[in-house]
Image (cartoon, rainbow, N blue to C red):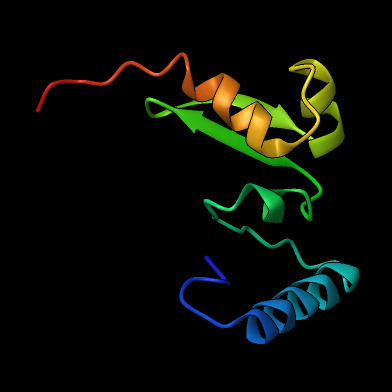
Length: 87
């Protein structure tokens, strides 16, 4: 699911409240997002590069692993290793 896609900030917050509520009740939620600030809200993150999982852990541990202050910085570090294929 990509909860915030195309919604206003208030509705975006409401999506996350619903996600937290479901998680608190023991329901596993898979969230896909391009917003790295939202990745910070998740318990575990899987980041893919070139179709392969290149990072999998908690936001805190990923930031430690990549010596990064934010998940944006983790993303940029991983993206530097991407190999773009010619169309």
